[in-house]
Length: 358
Image 1 (cartoon, rainbow, N blue to C red):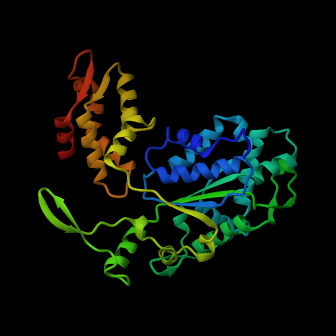
Image 2: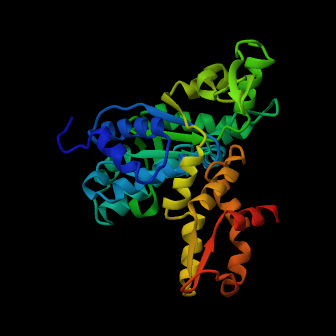
Image 3: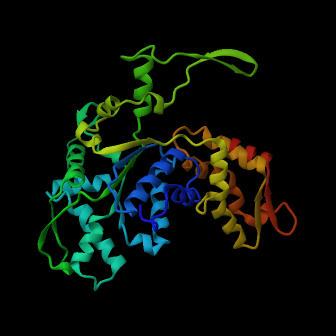
């Protein structure tokens, strides 16, 4: 590997500054990115995780990591695209242009308007493509064929595996049609796969593998109980993804399938306090703009995180909705909310509990 290429551990350390939790996903992404930056072959990645567990955050972290290091950014163009866009382009008979066209435009932004077309194409051909909400292009919904999803999967396959993808150049590049080799692209696809958790749980409890999941003995509140402990990562099989509506041909193009775990209360606390776009940071800025200081006690923060953790499969997104319930009335009349010295608004567990009950 080129000495100037960062090692996976170095990349992971940087990504963890922006992504809380999800060690397996960060490690897998770091390995792939290190190989990609070194010009080596690398397999595509499929990320499966509930809403709010950090899939898009991880994609953005990679974009930011490269953007802050121009020397590395020039080795690989990065774009993000919604899976449904591929389906729309497939219906127009141009499945590859949605991806390659955006890569070419992004390469132009990186290299400049005067860069030769050959250089732009080389830059685009080595790109990284993040596909959001790939679960939305399942081939069946409610037991019925989903034509748009089938077309979108086929469209994505065309770009992933094809070494000769037709691309009509934009007007600024001459407008003619070229054949582009897309085999050097890295695809990272992510989706929540709503319903997959329940489908796998049913399979191992009441379905065809009934009895495979054995109860274990646990002690809760001083009482001995038998409990089923289920984790999707332990029981997920390729057949489950086939049943969900992802074709075998599609799944075979991913070397790594990474499951993002639900966030723990401690991780939610860190997200609440540390991430720049958290509801807490936004509220602090709001009060600061009015000459007031907002502060929450550690116990109050933890109570908010515990409440958010009860919102199953919403992950970090639940933090904002829970905190809105708490902070709304204080933001409505900031002056009346002052309850501490020097114009401060101090919230402890009683204030949080009262807001959540209301």
